[in-house]
Image 1 (tube, one colour):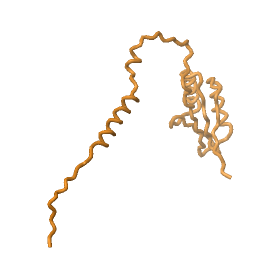
Image 2 (image 1 turned 90 degrees about the horizontal axis):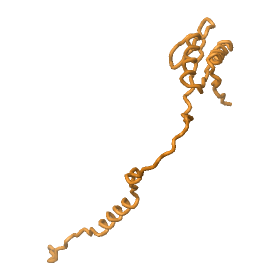
Image 3 (image 1 turned 180 degrees about the vertical axis):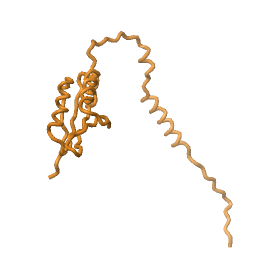
Image 4 (image 1 turned 30 degrees about the vertical axis):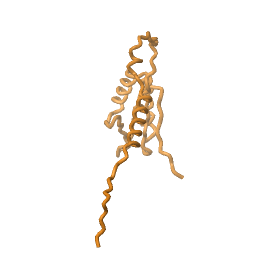
Length: 140
């Protein structure tokens, strides 16, 4: 037995809630939009600053001191192997570029203290006063 209905049901999608949401979004974006063009058209005489302009501090120069087989040391700056005299030249040039230059010394634990002190002396002759040493924290 087959049932048939004389009434056909039409499916409708109610668009009213979606239209309401779209209008609310449009109003929200209009209210939260800032109009920068209006602020730029104002003619204002801005004050000037003096010669003192605070610039961000430069990154410290990292000097790695490593041990060679014969008890000598070699120095690495910016992934370049340098000798002690060329290190002093490099430090003087860095001091000329930035008067507030800092140096961080990373000495291998097998390196003699004299070799680390030689880097400190090079910093001193270059006029660099901000010298620090890096150590590894021991986990207990």
